[in-house]
Length: 310
Image 1 (spheres, rainbow, N blue to C red):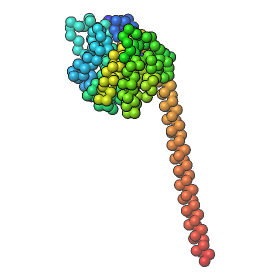
Image 2: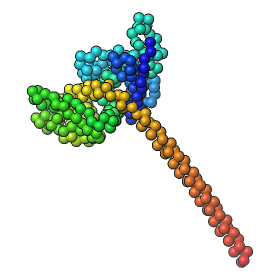
Image 3: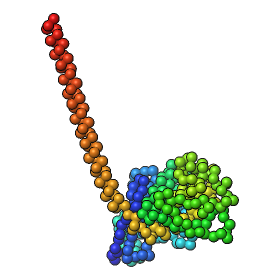
Image 4: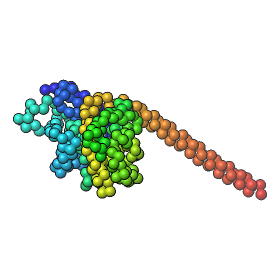
């Protein structure tokens, strides 16, 4: 069986991420390349170590738990087998296409990001890697879309109030406080927000929280913010679920390929400028040395002439 496969490239602080789509099989989610996604969530450049993380039974159990929280009622999707994997005979016709690279479906990719942000046993610097990646992904989505809309139920608000449709705009991507924080709990939430801001994890103001900061804040497991974060966690899971829906529908508009070409041109221009600077510096140093040597020779000749005159 054959399929039309399209490929887009998403940004990442460590490495760009290729995402594949099978246009002929819309029942399959977008597929994120495992090594590139996890390369942005773990502090290693070793592909072997990254794949060890991807295959870890303990981590898989934790990611599946996160998937249940973000996508309640959605079965955990079956992973595609790679082109070079051994396929049992009874499964040969169950998968209509095969990719050369190992991939995760989008909902699993989102669950890995959430796990990397908030699993308590992860070191703070590793959770920051995930925060930087989420922030860059959301900034890129806002840059391309101009705005994103979410159904939001304010944390701590009376239940009868229900959800409100709210848009966040490029470039800041922030919410008004009234859409996010119920008035009765603001005093309880603000100290934890301030603490994480001072630690460098959050960059927006509590009164104008950004989409990325809100998710990062809610998933933080640090002792001082556990109680406050737990109140905001259902909202963060809802935002991640809605983000997944948006990414599935709009992935093709997010490709970095044109940007990659422009960045490549900028890199080539930078290399030329650097080479020119190095050549100019070398020439200047050559003439400086030559001039210094000439001055020394002139002084030596002058002193010799003076000795002869005496």
